Amino acid sequence: MDLGSNGFVLVCAALVFIMTPGLAFFYGGLARKKNVVDTMMASVGLMGVSVIIWVCVGYSLCFSGDGPIIGDLRHSFLIGISPYQTLDGTANSISMYTYVAFQMMFAMITPAVVTGAGVGRMRYRAMFLFTCVWSVLVYYPLAHMVWGGGFMQQMGVIDFAGGFPIEVTTGMSGLVLAAMLGRRDGFGKKNFEPHNKPYVFLGASILWFGWLGFNAGSALLADGLASHAFMTTMVIAASALCSWMIVDIITSGKPTIVGASSGLVCGLVAATPACGYVPVWACFIIGGAVSPICYAVTNGVIKKNMFDDPMAVFGCHGIAGITGSIGLAFFCDPGTQPDPLNAGFFPGLAFGDGRQFAIQMACLGITAGFAAGMTAISVLITRIFTKIRVETSEEVKGLDLGEHNEDAYPAFEYHTED
Image (cartoon, rainbow, N blue to C red; front, side, top):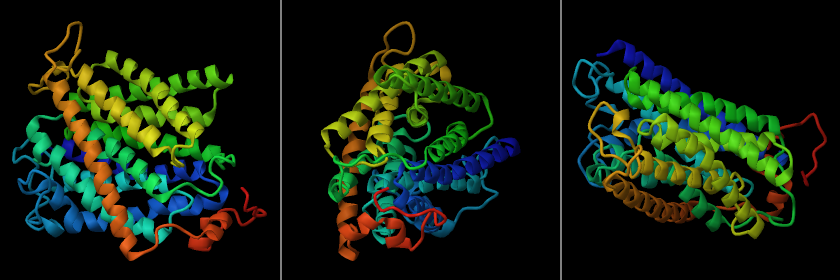
Protein backbone atom coordinates (compact mmCIF):
# COMPACT_ATOMS: atom_id res chain seq x y z
CA MET A 1 0.00 0.00 0.00
CA ASP A 2 1.20 3.48 -0.85
CA LEU A 3 0.66 5.14 2.53
CA GLY A 4 1.20 8.67 1.19
CA SER A 5 -1.36 8.24 -1.59
CA ASN A 6 -3.75 6.50 0.79
CA GLY A 7 -3.65 9.48 3.14
CA PHE A 8 -3.99 11.91 0.24
CA VAL A 9 -7.14 10.24 -1.09
CA LEU A 10 -8.65 10.06 2.43
CA VAL A 11 -8.15 13.83 2.76
CA CYS A 12 -9.70 14.30 -0.69
CA ALA A 13 -12.69 12.21 0.42
CA ALA A 14 -13.16 14.57 3.37
CA LEU A 15 -12.97 17.54 0.98
CA VAL A 16 -15.65 16.01 -1.23
CA PHE A 17 -17.81 15.43 1.85
CA ILE A 18 -17.76 19.14 2.72
CA MET A 19 -19.15 19.90 -0.73
CA THR A 20 -22.64 18.69 0.28
CA PRO A 21 -22.98 21.24 3.12
CA GLY A 22 -21.52 23.77 0.68
CA LEU A 23 -24.22 22.90 -1.84
CA ALA A 24 -26.82 23.32 0.92
CA PHE A 25 -25.62 26.91 1.50
CA PHE A 26 -25.41 27.61 -2.23
CA TYR A 27 -28.94 26.39 -2.88
CA GLY A 28 -30.23 27.83 0.40
CA GLY A 29 -29.01 31.29 -0.51
CA LEU A 30 -30.62 31.10 -3.94
CA ALA A 31 -33.97 30.00 -2.48
CA ARG A 32 -36.70 32.28 -1.18
CA LYS A 33 -36.62 33.10 2.52
CA LYS A 34 -39.64 30.96 3.31
CA ASN A 35 -38.05 27.85 1.72
CA VAL A 36 -34.43 28.02 2.84
CA VAL A 37 -34.69 25.35 5.58
CA ASP A 38 -36.49 22.92 3.29
CA THR A 39 -33.97 23.55 0.52
CA MET A 40 -31.01 22.87 2.81
CA MET A 41 -32.71 19.87 4.41
CA ALA A 42 -32.76 18.10 1.04
CA SER A 43 -28.96 17.98 1.20
CA VAL A 44 -28.88 17.29 4.94
CA GLY A 45 -31.09 14.21 4.60
CA LEU A 46 -28.81 12.81 1.91
CA MET A 47 -25.79 13.21 4.18
CA GLY A 48 -27.35 10.41 6.19
CA VAL A 49 -29.29 8.14 3.88
CA SER A 50 -26.74 8.12 1.03
CA VAL A 51 -24.09 6.62 3.32
CA ILE A 52 -26.45 3.87 4.44
CA ILE A 53 -27.54 2.93 0.91
CA TRP A 54 -23.97 3.10 -0.37
CA VAL A 55 -22.59 0.68 2.20
CA CYS A 56 -25.57 -1.67 1.94
CA VAL A 57 -25.81 -1.98 -1.85
CA GLY A 58 -24.47 1.09 -3.65
CA TYR A 59 -20.77 0.30 -3.83
CA SER A 60 -21.46 -3.26 -4.91
CA LEU A 61 -23.90 -2.22 -7.65
CA CYS A 62 -21.38 0.29 -8.99
CA PHE A 63 -18.10 -1.59 -8.76
CA SER A 64 -18.68 -5.35 -8.69
CA GLY A 65 -19.65 -7.82 -11.36
CA ASP A 66 -19.21 -7.56 -15.12
CA GLY A 67 -22.74 -6.64 -16.19
CA PRO A 68 -22.96 -4.11 -19.02
CA ILE A 69 -25.38 -1.79 -17.16
CA ILE A 70 -25.29 -2.57 -13.43
CA GLY A 71 -23.12 -4.55 -11.04
CA ASP A 72 -24.17 -7.29 -8.63
CA LEU A 73 -24.59 -7.61 -4.85
CA ARG A 74 -21.51 -9.67 -4.05
CA HIS A 75 -20.00 -6.85 -1.97
CA SER A 76 -23.20 -5.73 -0.21
CA PHE A 77 -22.42 -4.37 3.26
CA LEU A 78 -18.76 -4.39 2.06
CA ILE A 79 -18.63 -8.17 2.48
CA GLY A 80 -15.49 -9.58 0.90
CA ILE A 81 -13.57 -6.29 1.07
CA SER A 82 -10.69 -5.74 3.50
CA PRO A 83 -9.19 -2.38 4.54
CA TYR A 84 -5.76 -3.98 4.03
CA GLN A 85 -6.58 -4.97 0.45
CA THR A 86 -5.30 -2.55 -2.19
CA LEU A 87 -7.39 -1.19 -5.02
CA ASP A 88 -5.54 -2.81 -7.90
CA GLY A 89 -3.70 -5.53 -6.00
CA THR A 90 -0.30 -3.85 -6.30
CA ALA A 91 2.01 -2.22 -3.76
CA ASN A 92 1.65 1.21 -5.39
CA SER A 93 -2.03 1.66 -4.56
CA ILE A 94 -4.56 2.70 -1.91
CA SER A 95 -6.77 0.77 0.50
CA MET A 96 -10.04 -0.57 -0.88
CA TYR A 97 -11.82 1.10 2.05
CA THR A 98 -10.28 4.43 1.02
CA TYR A 99 -11.65 3.98 -2.48
CA VAL A 100 -15.08 3.01 -1.12
CA ALA A 101 -15.08 6.12 1.09
CA PHE A 102 -13.98 8.41 -1.75
CA GLN A 103 -16.66 7.13 -4.11
CA MET A 104 -19.24 7.30 -1.30
CA MET A 105 -18.88 11.09 -1.22
CA PHE A 106 -19.67 11.24 -4.95
CA ALA A 107 -22.79 9.18 -4.30
CA MET A 108 -23.77 11.68 -1.60
CA ILE A 109 -23.52 14.95 -3.48
CA THR A 110 -24.85 13.74 -6.86
CA PRO A 111 -28.52 13.29 -5.84
CA ALA A 112 -28.22 16.44 -3.71
CA VAL A 113 -27.58 18.44 -6.90
CA VAL A 114 -30.81 17.09 -8.44
CA THR A 115 -32.91 18.30 -5.48
CA GLY A 116 -32.44 21.89 -6.68
CA ALA A 117 -34.97 21.28 -9.45
CA GLY A 118 -37.74 20.60 -6.92
CA VAL A 119 -37.19 23.59 -4.64
CA GLY A 120 -40.27 25.45 -3.50
CA ARG A 121 -42.97 22.91 -4.31
CA MET A 122 -41.86 19.30 -3.73
CA ARG A 123 -42.87 17.58 -0.49
CA TYR A 124 -39.92 16.66 1.68
CA ARG A 125 -40.91 13.02 2.12
CA ALA A 126 -41.30 12.75 -1.65
CA MET A 127 -37.88 14.35 -2.18
CA PHE A 128 -36.33 11.96 0.33
CA LEU A 129 -37.85 8.89 -1.31
CA PHE A 130 -37.17 10.13 -4.83
CA THR A 131 -33.45 10.65 -4.20
CA CYS A 132 -33.14 7.13 -2.77
CA VAL A 133 -34.88 5.60 -5.80
CA TRP A 134 -32.95 7.86 -8.17
CA SER A 135 -29.61 6.80 -6.71
CA VAL A 136 -30.38 3.13 -7.38
CA LEU A 137 -31.97 3.56 -10.82
CA VAL A 138 -29.86 6.37 -12.24
CA TYR A 139 -26.54 7.08 -10.50
CA TYR A 140 -25.42 3.56 -9.62
CA PRO A 141 -25.96 2.16 -13.14
CA LEU A 142 -24.23 5.11 -14.81
CA ALA A 143 -21.28 4.95 -12.41
CA HIS A 144 -20.97 1.25 -13.26
CA MET A 145 -21.25 1.89 -17.01
CA VAL A 146 -18.51 4.55 -16.99
CA TRP A 147 -16.16 3.46 -14.17
CA GLY A 148 -17.15 0.00 -12.95
CA GLY A 149 -16.58 -2.14 -16.02
CA GLY A 150 -19.86 -1.45 -17.81
CA PHE A 151 -20.37 -1.12 -21.53
CA MET A 152 -19.39 2.55 -21.89
CA GLN A 153 -16.07 1.85 -20.23
CA GLN A 154 -15.65 -1.08 -22.60
CA MET A 155 -16.35 1.29 -25.49
CA GLY A 156 -13.37 3.35 -24.36
CA VAL A 157 -15.08 6.38 -22.80
CA ILE A 158 -12.89 8.55 -20.58
CA ASP A 159 -14.22 10.67 -17.72
CA PHE A 160 -11.75 11.81 -15.10
CA ALA A 161 -13.99 12.77 -12.17
CA GLY A 162 -17.65 12.40 -13.12
CA GLY A 163 -18.80 14.53 -16.03
CA PHE A 164 -21.01 11.75 -17.35
CA PRO A 165 -22.46 9.98 -14.27
CA ILE A 166 -22.60 13.16 -12.17
CA GLU A 167 -22.83 16.43 -14.09
CA VAL A 168 -24.61 15.53 -17.34
CA THR A 169 -26.80 13.11 -15.40
CA THR A 170 -27.91 15.63 -12.76
CA GLY A 171 -28.62 18.25 -15.42
CA MET A 172 -30.88 15.97 -17.44
CA SER A 173 -32.52 14.62 -14.28
CA GLY A 174 -33.16 18.15 -13.03
CA LEU A 175 -34.80 19.03 -16.35
CA VAL A 176 -37.14 16.02 -16.17
CA LEU A 177 -37.97 16.52 -12.49
CA ALA A 178 -38.76 20.22 -12.98
CA ALA A 179 -40.97 19.45 -15.98
CA MET A 180 -42.89 16.70 -14.18
CA LEU A 181 -43.41 18.81 -11.05
CA GLY A 182 -44.72 21.83 -12.90
CA ARG A 183 -44.08 25.48 -12.16
CA ARG A 184 -44.14 27.18 -8.79
CA ASP A 185 -47.06 29.40 -7.88
CA GLY A 186 -46.43 32.80 -9.48
CA PHE A 187 -43.60 31.60 -11.71
CA GLY A 188 -43.14 34.06 -14.55
CA LYS A 189 -45.16 36.73 -12.71
CA LYS A 190 -43.18 37.27 -9.50
CA ASN A 191 -39.51 38.10 -9.13
CA PHE A 192 -37.94 35.15 -7.29
CA GLU A 193 -34.75 36.84 -6.12
CA PRO A 194 -32.13 34.92 -4.07
CA HIS A 195 -32.90 35.68 -0.44
CA ASN A 196 -29.31 35.58 0.90
CA LYS A 197 -26.58 36.37 -1.61
CA PRO A 198 -23.70 36.02 0.89
CA TYR A 199 -24.92 32.43 1.43
CA VAL A 200 -24.61 31.88 -2.31
CA PHE A 201 -20.97 32.95 -2.32
CA LEU A 202 -20.22 31.02 0.87
CA GLY A 203 -21.64 27.87 -0.66
CA ALA A 204 -19.78 28.39 -3.95
CA SER A 205 -16.50 28.95 -2.07
CA ILE A 206 -16.95 25.74 -0.07
CA LEU A 207 -17.74 23.91 -3.30
CA TRP A 208 -14.54 25.24 -4.90
CA PHE A 209 -12.51 24.12 -1.88
CA GLY A 210 -14.03 20.66 -1.92
CA TRP A 211 -13.92 20.33 -5.71
CA LEU A 212 -10.12 20.41 -5.63
CA GLY A 213 -10.30 17.13 -3.71
CA PHE A 214 -13.07 15.92 -6.00
CA ASN A 215 -10.91 16.30 -9.12
CA ALA A 216 -7.34 15.90 -7.87
CA GLY A 217 -8.32 12.92 -5.72
CA SER A 218 -9.68 11.15 -8.79
CA ALA A 219 -6.07 10.47 -9.78
CA LEU A 220 -6.17 8.00 -6.82
CA LEU A 221 -2.44 8.56 -6.23
CA ALA A 222 -0.47 11.51 -4.90
CA ASP A 223 1.35 11.94 -8.19
CA GLY A 224 1.84 14.32 -11.10
CA LEU A 225 -1.58 13.54 -12.53
CA ALA A 226 -3.22 14.74 -9.30
CA SER A 227 -1.21 17.96 -9.57
CA HIS A 228 -2.28 18.37 -13.19
CA ALA A 229 -5.97 17.89 -12.29
CA PHE A 230 -5.62 20.41 -9.44
CA MET A 231 -4.10 23.03 -11.73
CA THR A 232 -6.51 22.56 -14.63
CA THR A 233 -9.48 22.71 -12.24
CA MET A 234 -8.24 26.04 -10.88
CA VAL A 235 -7.71 27.52 -14.34
CA ILE A 236 -11.10 26.44 -15.73
CA ALA A 237 -12.95 27.64 -12.60
CA ALA A 238 -11.13 30.99 -12.52
CA SER A 239 -11.69 31.56 -16.24
CA ALA A 240 -15.39 30.77 -15.91
CA LEU A 241 -15.77 33.09 -12.91
CA CYS A 242 -14.19 35.96 -14.84
CA SER A 243 -16.11 35.28 -18.03
CA TRP A 244 -19.47 35.36 -16.18
CA MET A 245 -18.48 38.70 -14.63
CA ILE A 246 -17.73 40.01 -18.12
CA VAL A 247 -21.13 38.80 -19.32
CA ASP A 248 -22.77 40.56 -16.34
CA ILE A 249 -21.00 43.81 -17.21
CA ILE A 250 -22.00 43.54 -20.88
CA THR A 251 -25.65 42.74 -20.15
CA SER A 252 -26.37 44.81 -17.03
CA GLY A 253 -23.43 47.19 -16.66
CA LYS A 254 -22.20 45.77 -13.33
CA PRO A 255 -20.76 42.50 -12.03
CA THR A 256 -22.79 40.61 -9.41
CA ILE A 257 -21.82 38.22 -6.63
CA VAL A 258 -24.51 35.73 -7.68
CA GLY A 259 -23.20 35.85 -11.24
CA ALA A 260 -19.59 35.36 -10.17
CA SER A 261 -20.61 32.47 -7.91
CA SER A 262 -22.67 30.89 -10.69
CA GLY A 263 -19.79 31.20 -13.15
CA LEU A 264 -17.45 29.61 -10.63
CA VAL A 265 -19.74 26.60 -10.19
CA CYS A 266 -20.18 26.26 -13.97
CA GLY A 267 -16.41 26.22 -14.37
CA LEU A 268 -15.99 23.57 -11.70
CA VAL A 269 -18.63 21.43 -13.38
CA ALA A 270 -16.95 21.78 -16.77
CA ALA A 271 -13.58 20.86 -15.24
CA THR A 272 -14.89 17.61 -13.78
CA PRO A 273 -14.69 15.36 -16.86
CA ALA A 274 -11.77 17.13 -18.51
CA CYS A 275 -9.29 18.10 -15.77
CA GLY A 276 -7.06 15.03 -16.04
CA TYR A 277 -6.99 14.84 -19.84
CA VAL A 278 -6.65 18.33 -21.31
CA PRO A 279 -3.57 20.60 -21.42
CA VAL A 280 -3.53 23.79 -19.36
CA TRP A 281 -3.80 26.05 -22.41
CA ALA A 282 -7.13 24.43 -23.36
CA CYS A 283 -8.54 25.20 -19.89
CA PHE A 284 -8.73 28.91 -20.69
CA ILE A 285 -10.91 28.09 -23.69
CA ILE A 286 -13.18 25.70 -21.79
CA GLY A 287 -13.56 28.03 -18.80
CA GLY A 288 -14.03 31.13 -20.96
CA ALA A 289 -16.71 29.45 -23.06
CA VAL A 290 -18.77 27.68 -20.41
CA SER A 291 -20.15 30.73 -18.59
CA PRO A 292 -21.58 32.55 -21.65
CA ILE A 293 -23.14 29.28 -22.81
CA CYS A 294 -24.74 28.56 -19.42
CA TYR A 295 -25.83 32.20 -19.05
CA ALA A 296 -27.55 32.14 -22.43
CA VAL A 297 -29.35 28.85 -21.73
CA THR A 298 -30.38 29.77 -18.17
CA ASN A 299 -31.68 33.22 -19.06
CA GLY A 300 -33.33 31.96 -22.21
CA VAL A 301 -35.28 29.41 -20.19
CA ILE A 302 -36.30 32.03 -17.62
CA LYS A 303 -37.42 34.58 -20.21
CA LYS A 304 -39.46 32.05 -22.18
CA ASN A 305 -40.87 30.41 -19.02
CA MET A 306 -40.14 27.02 -20.58
CA PHE A 307 -39.90 25.17 -17.27
CA ASP A 308 -39.25 26.04 -13.64
CA ASP A 309 -35.75 25.00 -12.53
CA PRO A 310 -35.18 27.16 -9.43
CA MET A 311 -31.48 26.33 -8.93
CA ALA A 312 -30.66 26.14 -12.68
CA VAL A 313 -29.66 22.48 -12.34
CA PHE A 314 -30.05 21.97 -16.08
CA GLY A 315 -28.75 25.39 -17.09
CA CYS A 316 -25.59 25.22 -15.00
CA HIS A 317 -24.80 21.61 -14.12
CA GLY A 318 -26.25 19.99 -17.23
CA ILE A 319 -25.07 22.49 -19.84
CA ALA A 320 -21.71 23.00 -18.10
CA GLY A 321 -21.24 19.24 -17.88
CA ILE A 322 -21.99 18.89 -21.59
CA THR A 323 -19.61 21.77 -22.39
CA GLY A 324 -16.83 20.20 -20.34
CA SER A 325 -17.45 16.80 -21.90
CA ILE A 326 -17.25 18.28 -25.41
CA GLY A 327 -14.12 20.19 -24.37
CA LEU A 328 -12.61 16.90 -23.19
CA ALA A 329 -13.50 15.20 -26.48
CA PHE A 330 -12.04 18.09 -28.43
CA PHE A 331 -8.81 18.80 -26.53
CA CYS A 332 -7.92 15.42 -24.99
CA ASP A 333 -4.12 15.17 -25.05
CA PRO A 334 -2.28 11.83 -24.57
CA GLY A 335 0.63 13.77 -23.09
CA THR A 336 -1.33 14.46 -19.90
CA GLN A 337 -1.58 10.79 -18.96
CA PRO A 338 1.08 8.26 -17.92
CA ASP A 339 -0.79 5.51 -19.81
CA PRO A 340 -1.60 5.35 -23.55
CA LEU A 341 -4.64 7.40 -24.54
CA ASN A 342 -6.39 8.31 -27.79
CA ALA A 343 -6.08 11.92 -28.84
CA GLY A 344 -9.09 14.19 -29.04
CA PHE A 345 -10.24 15.97 -32.16
CA PHE A 346 -7.84 18.88 -31.61
CA PRO A 347 -5.29 17.89 -28.93
CA GLY A 348 -2.58 20.35 -29.94
CA LEU A 349 -1.44 22.16 -33.05
CA ALA A 350 -2.85 19.51 -35.39
CA PHE A 351 -6.11 17.62 -35.73
CA GLY A 352 -6.45 14.20 -34.15
CA ASP A 353 -8.05 11.21 -35.80
CA GLY A 354 -11.44 11.79 -34.13
CA ARG A 355 -11.88 8.30 -32.67
CA GLN A 356 -12.01 9.47 -29.05
CA PHE A 357 -14.25 12.36 -30.02
CA ALA A 358 -16.75 9.94 -31.57
CA ILE A 359 -16.69 7.70 -28.49
CA GLN A 360 -17.22 10.64 -26.15
CA MET A 361 -20.11 12.06 -28.16
CA ALA A 362 -21.87 8.69 -28.39
CA CYS A 363 -21.57 8.13 -24.63
CA LEU A 364 -22.75 11.68 -23.96
CA GLY A 365 -25.97 10.93 -25.82
CA ILE A 366 -26.40 7.57 -24.05
CA THR A 367 -25.89 9.19 -20.64
CA ALA A 368 -28.37 12.00 -21.29
CA GLY A 369 -31.05 9.65 -22.62
CA PHE A 370 -30.64 7.08 -19.85
CA ALA A 371 -30.71 9.75 -17.11
CA ALA A 372 -33.84 11.40 -18.52
CA GLY A 373 -35.78 8.17 -18.94
CA MET A 374 -34.86 6.63 -15.59
CA THR A 375 -35.52 9.90 -13.75
CA ALA A 376 -39.07 9.89 -15.12
CA ILE A 377 -39.47 6.33 -13.87
CA SER A 378 -38.08 7.37 -10.45
CA VAL A 379 -40.72 10.12 -10.21
CA LEU A 380 -43.49 7.70 -11.15
CA ILE A 381 -42.32 5.17 -8.54
CA THR A 382 -42.25 7.91 -5.90
CA ARG A 383 -45.83 8.89 -6.80
CA ILE A 384 -46.98 5.37 -5.94
CA PHE A 385 -46.00 5.87 -2.29
CA THR A 386 -46.60 9.57 -1.64
CA LYS A 387 -47.97 12.74 -3.14
CA ILE A 388 -45.19 14.62 -4.88
CA ARG A 389 -46.21 18.24 -4.66
CA VAL A 390 -47.35 20.33 -1.68
CA GLU A 391 -50.75 22.01 -1.58
CA THR A 392 -50.99 25.53 -2.99
CA SER A 393 -51.68 26.97 0.48
CA GLU A 394 -48.48 25.39 1.84
CA GLU A 395 -46.50 26.63 -1.14
CA VAL A 396 -47.70 30.18 -0.50
CA LYS A 397 -46.96 29.92 3.23
CA GLY A 398 -43.58 28.39 2.62
CA LEU A 399 -42.19 24.88 2.92
CA ASP A 400 -40.08 25.73 5.97
CA LEU A 401 -43.19 25.99 8.12
CA GLY A 402 -45.33 23.58 6.14
CA GLU A 403 -42.82 20.70 5.88
CA HIS A 404 -40.57 21.25 8.90
CA ASN A 405 -42.37 23.64 11.26
CA GLU A 406 -39.21 25.75 11.36
CA ASP A 407 -38.53 29.35 10.46
CA ALA A 408 -35.01 30.11 9.24
CA TYR A 409 -35.18 33.62 10.66
CA PRO A 410 -37.51 33.56 13.71
CA ALA A 411 -36.11 36.83 15.06
CA PHE A 412 -37.55 38.72 12.10
CA GLU A 413 -41.12 39.34 11.03
CA TYR A 414 -42.18 36.70 8.53
CA HIS A 415 -43.71 37.78 5.23
CA THR A 416 -45.18 35.08 3.01
CA GLU A 417 -44.51 37.08 -0.13
CA ASP A 418 -40.71 36.97 0.47
